[in-house]
Image (cartoon, rainbow, N blue to C red; front, side, top):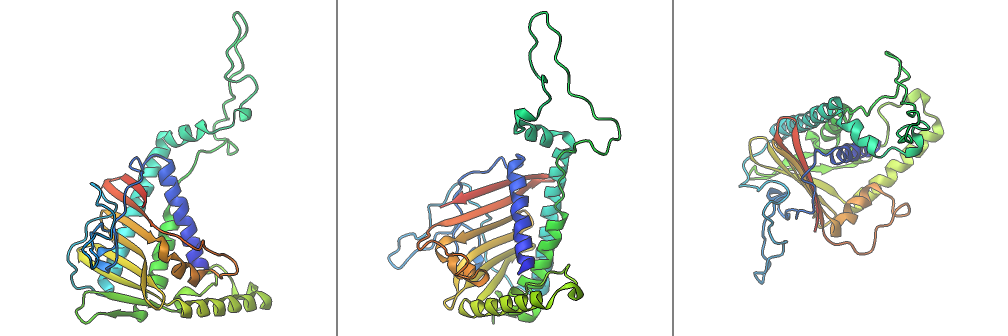
Length: 318
């Protein structure tokens, strides 16, 4: 699970950077799309209940995620390649956009707004009294001085590589995949080998003590037991070239917890809070963390490419 934790941590930091640096001028409380069927992952559809009443929020003018069309046949190889291509394209594009801001000095200017006034040199920025001497200017660092303060450096390559590794080694492993009879739904049944491996790729087996190894094995056994109580699988569909839709389902009833779109123009995800406990229950020991007794609503986000090195991120809660 260490890989999953590392990926989620870097992903959260990356999204925070995007929002903070103003690339995400579209951030707002947009209504996320509905779910229910894998083909509806991230889309804002309007399913109706037995009485004919709409069970989804009112469709906004500009919903989070793309509208999903009719599903077409899918294979593991095609799905894996589309996911890898789209993730690489979007994260590299965000990296380029952030690098442009970094080089323009915009990042440093924005961070300078939050600098503590106490950190400035004494007298710097003060208005002199009439006839008085000018206050000292801030000293310029010597040319080539390695000790000079550097601006914020943005590099999303590690996050990209970790996400690609997680998709290949955890979420989309061919050995645990199956295709529906009509060829429209690709399912990955996640097992302990994918979910519960808590070893670190950087760990040297010779450097791990017997006590640490025993602790890892105990954690893996507990994780496997939680997974048995909350079976986890991912349904994957496609409705066109480079358009992959995911539906993460958990529990004996296979309730839909999370939906995602990994398209060539957008990456989006939505989480059903009322069913989140089924997913959290796989990764977290209930003795360590307890969710609130009642949670309702849907949380959704998207990062959309407008053009090269131009992205908008949006976040919505319903």
